Length: 110
Length: 329
Image (cartoon, each protein chain N blue to C red):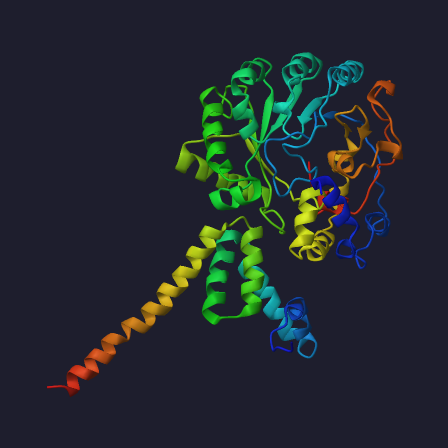
């Protein structure tokens, strides 16, 4: 079935450099530097990326960082907890706006 | 249909073909490399395919139903060979070698012939035979190389069978209690971690550090080193890869991870593997495939010394596993 998201497109990511090679080079250099071992380990960075992938709901990123997390030695319990962190922040971000709702309602109400 | 027959059939099936994978030999040629023997320092002894577990990543299809086990006559031929060659390391494996009743005899006879003898253990088989084996292992200072694939219970049990994670922790505690894996004891305990699926293993140095930290923190356990091995697409693991539609992608991943620099240090260059029936292979994976050393059946009793340096090593596409990333030891 035709779909906008095709798994075989993920390894073609670098083709994005075809008509703007300099910008692509800068982006991929930066990208690789971000994910290299630093104050945070590659494993920890992959877990953060997995969480963010769920926030931005990017199927390519979820595919790539699920594999990356497994290959960096994370287990399913850790990966599932990372997704719950996303869920808590996303849910919390909605819920905390309830204070605004209550402020406005308070102002308008007797 | 018996498991072995099912697996053989699966391996012949169209799904198992990988048309766009470059043969390992041509990959070597492309990098101007040859796979030949160096000095042979290690004798690996496979005591048989009998095992109490049926791990999903097992390249040998080892399990409780297997009847291939080393007998006393073959054991004597192997010990005689070790006497003739004086290997630096003797590495005992299986199946679960603990289930072969001749294991204590083998350890007693080969330990004086080598500075380093090793036993590969799945821990649960060692647990079954602990009373019979612990004294002989500690007396001869046999290095224990124990399977411990993941720090996670569900992933470990999914690969190795229900209850294995908790049993493994209990056995590691017993081994620590007698000094295995403890500083200054002279009793070395190493762990082996395999990915619990169709993915590559993590960086060894980082994961070893993490295992030390978590095992100490959660269970008060210590060990010496952790080795991280990729799963070899043979036997039961190959069957699982095919059944789950992961085979082609996994092979492509191995090919993409080919590291020409790893070829120099491949274990097959410095070891010879002897099967339960006394025949020789370049490694345990070639044993699983039935690829004899030098391409013909040579019995250990026929060998006057170690294989000659420069002898070509029999290779096939599963060799991509050992040449992936930082290699396989």
